[in-house]
Image 1 (cartoon, rainbow, N blue to C red):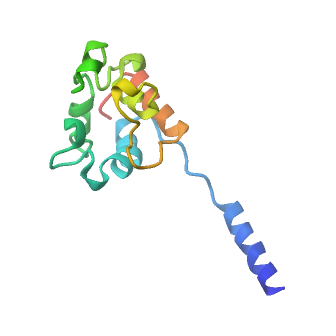
Image 2 (tube, rainbow, N blue to C red):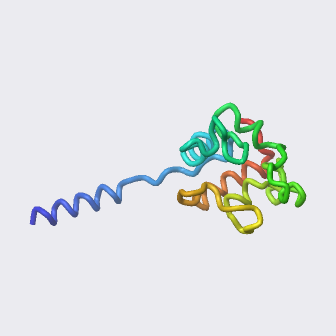
Image 3 (cartoon, rainbow, N blue to C red):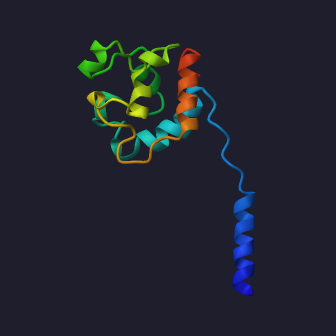
Length: 134
């Protein structure tokens, strides 16, 4: 009976957990809740020597992403910027999060679970709204 009571309490606690609210489509929220925990671990996109010559640490993310050319020649030739304000279809960041074309390399983040649809939607909305530095 005691095991049943513990199981019931555990289920009750889990049911009471509130889901994390969606990430607002603002760079400050995206930085804190997506880029920092998912992209800067193990120095992937952090100093020194960030992957793809892209640093996603606080204070550097905006200048490294917005209206910045891609380092990958194929992406440049295809008209992508890392983030094209107001234009998600020409924002390489979204392509890398979805990993839909192997000619552009693998999905990001590498060696980690993919971002959730809600996280990617927040980034896309930030881009659609002009990729402001707020």
